[in-house]
Amino acid sequence: MNKTLPLLACTFLIAASGVALAQKGDGGKKLYCWNENGRKVCGDALPAHAVDNARTEINAKSGLATGQVARALTAEERAAAEVQAKADEEARLAAEAQARRDRAMAESYATEEDLRRAFGERQAVADETVKASQLGVEGRRQSLVVLLRRAGENELSGKPVPKNMQDNVRIQHDQLLHQQALLKQQLAERELIDEDLATALERYHAMKKPTKDG
Image (cartoon, rainbow, N blue to C red; front, side, top):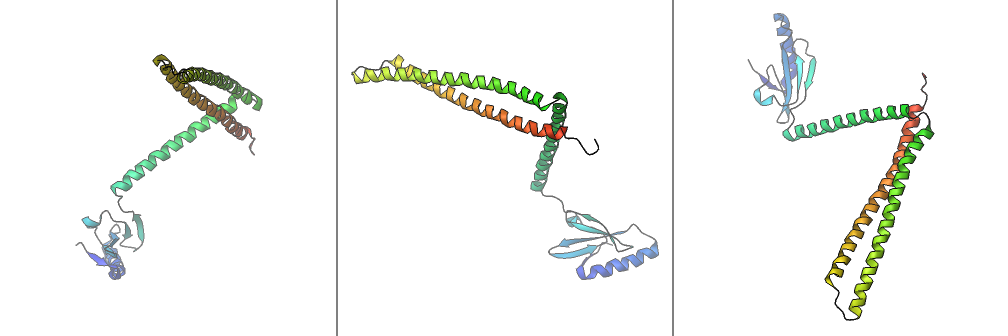
């Protein structure tokens, strides 16, 4: 028979059930205790309305707790748990990939100088790219200055500024802004190479560091 009792009756129920079941030889019977409306309730069967509640499972024969069951997660909590699990898995895979890259780096470069030389090639290419963009920015600026000067001379002399000149001013201005944005990006990438080198050296030293067993 299904029974639910408040907290004050739980101890008696557990003890009495233990005696009765010991006499019957049924050692697999369970009791359940859960919170309901702010009070603890125990019973020899779990009602349908309590299946999602957190509960303690008790061996009716010994009166000892045999397990804890957490309450069922809400839809929001399940979604959050899935997101966290995905993030944890991605972090694990990223860490494994980084470890493989570190091992490959340690095996590819016999010395620190070899590693620096490899990064030096990237730095040299980036430096040349930045230099070319700086020249491009300066050239665009000079072209724009010339066009603006001519347009200004026309206005000062009371002459209209030709439409093709206006269009050229706008085009040169847009190209200058584009070139400046490109240069800014290239300078950031050049700094990133230095940061990558510092990180690579740190990891390289850690991989090459002799272990106690070695």
